[in-house]
Amino acid sequence: MIGLALVFILGFLARWVAWQLNLPSILLLLIFGLAAGPWLGWLDPDELFGNLLLPFVSLSVALILFEGGLSLNFRELPEIGGVVRNMISIGALITWVIGAFAAWLILELSLPLAVLIGAVFVVTGPTVVIPLLLHVRPTARVRNTVKWEGILNDPIGAILAVLVFKAMVAGDFSGETAPREFLYSILTGVGVGVGGAGVMLLFLKLHWVPEALDNAFSIAMVVSAFIISNELQPESGLLATTIMGIALANQRKIPVKHIVEFKENLRVLIISTLFILLSARLKADDLLAVWAPSLAFMAVLMLVARPLSVWVSCLGSKFTNEERIFVAWMAPRGIVAAAVTSIFSSRLTEQGYEGAEQLVPISFIVIMGTVTIYGLTAFPLAKRLGLAEPSPQGVLFVGAHGWAREIAKALSKQGIAVGLVDSRRANVSAARMDGLQAYYGSILSRHVLDNVSLFGIGRLCAMTSNTEANSLAAVHFTEVFGRKQVYQLSPEKDSGRAGIEPQHMQGRRLFSAQATYDKLEERFANGAEVKATRLTERFTFETLKEEYDDQVLPLFVISEKDGEKSLQVVQADQPVRPRPGQVLISIVPAQAVEAQAVEARQDDQPQEPPAES
Image (cartoon, rainbow, N blue to C red; front, side):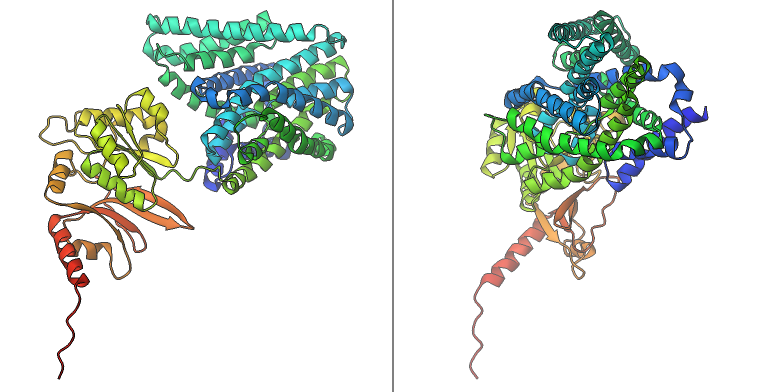
């Protein structure tokens, strides 16, 4: 009981510490697992799970790859498809050959073991790549390329490793059956994956499964596809679950958003558990015995195999030199490499292969090394190459009517990224004439979501006259920005809609409870304007309110630290207290605007010379 509880508690603590220190979570998970296992002796996964450990690991990896497949969208392929194809074929072959040669020369493994570990390290691992991409936030082309490669390479690398393993067990290294076995594995995995997705969609379409059991049903289907595929063709199950996820994600008949959300939460739990368990299995003496040659082997993978495979894969593509450099510096190994070597090492040791027991410590040193180096250097490199997306402080406005454009222009002038979406062409044209990024169409349309550039944008403000449309937009973009970063105007109190929608079906209230669409429309009709004010020690927020007779409506507060700007959205239930040094975006009344205009005109008039005495 204590051991099981310790696994979950350490997994959470590792992720929490990583969040506090702004470090990749995988790195902390490995450290916590090593501390609980070989260093302190608190946790022994083999004693805890017995013979169930490796089957549990295999099923968990299958679920991880299914969730990864759900994140792959065919709309991303036109720009990166050729490069991804080359990286999982030619690039994988280059990595395999160089890795095998380095393992034979540096690690002094026998040739069969060297070929096996070279196949294992073809994989780059979505369990590590995806968290790193979330941490770094590179540009879309780079992000999609690394994501597709990481998810597709995992089952391919596992299949290659299985073929080598089967040849080692059978003692047949002629290679005559390997191409046929590889083709069978690909066809079986694709067939079972597509078939499993079809069955799952049929059950959901005909409502044969109650909605409350959708997530449990999806897990059962993934596990079934994994087992069936493996029974038909050994170790093709990982490809089957990956293809199943891709097929579900790219169909448009049945909504699977709730399944995607559940799998994302499940992935966090599974990855945390697996890394704690597998790193806790290691023995300190085994790590110390192979650490030096393992680091040299890792250096060859990072500095020779990866750059060469990326360079060859990108030939003839539109990738810039900066993009190629970053992709070449993004190949961390993850849980699939650890799981495959853990399974094969024990079996080959039983078969009498000398040196097979070294595969696991070698793999974990490579995993820890690549995660540490890539995790600590990826963001600085992306920033230096100009590929790191800035902190998403911008705002996507739903509604491009007159005063929404004025608010967007005020933010844009302060260096905050903005975008506007409106279903009226006249509003969109006017926004574009003002130099703003604007899109025509319904905010709920998938076409709009696919074409809106969210680079630098991290929140939504729904400001149309339709309360229901604002609420739907907020719900629609919760999965994009998170619940904390979607906002909408307060509904009119006499409209009959105030307080009707449940909390989870609406955004956070913008500006103030009185800042309804009609009230704001009335203010601007009476001449109110949007004003940006930099506050100082002498001219504070209180001074501003006194000057405008307490008729100022704060909208946004902009802070700046180390050259980076941070935007705070004013909310109805959280009174704002801007400090000196911050910029306040607010709506000021007509009389204040007129008074300022008169004062400005007086200042511009030439002064009469003093009368001569």
